[in-house]
Length: 236
Image 1 (cartoon, rainbow, N blue to C red):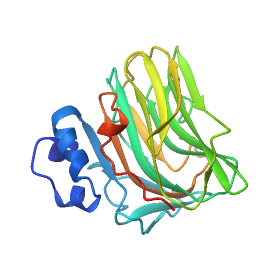
Image 2: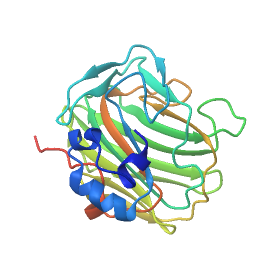
Image 3: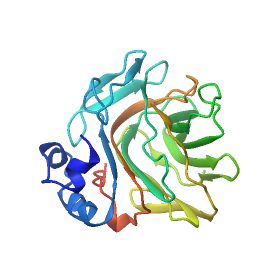
């Protein structure tokens, strides 16, 4: 489903199934971006994903989601949804299920002639897992400036759903878990160029993710938690 369907038109059935109605109303006024729903392996964001390994579908509080085994499952999508954006927000609904210490589960990169995974311009979501808890790692680099947002003391139980986000408003880079700021740092990033996305691994096919992803929303503005489009994950 293209974001135009959400922003400009009537609220579609897929948005209702996500529980997005309040967020969609706000997004129609404020946000331009793309909604990717991982409820099928045939089409994500109107693109046909390349399947790596054998990702499958599982349930979530909002409908089907894609589940990754942490060994060799991932999706590759021929699009960088934030190319050209001077400001941005990435929201996602995901469920980490434990496993290896370092796991990359969303990787956007500009195609600059480098081998996959080695582009100097990229935006990432990772997690670090210690026993049965995890903490968030958000990272952006434009090839010059680079910034990691990571707070090892802020750990959360594996095996449940979370809303996570990162945003950049032109001066400050922030990360969130369930609407709560994890870290914010002043920095300047230039817009990124056209490229590609990997879900469930680093682009060069390492650091695989063990868990599930239901949806991601890519906005071309820095949204505050009150304006996030994806629903908050249920507690427990």
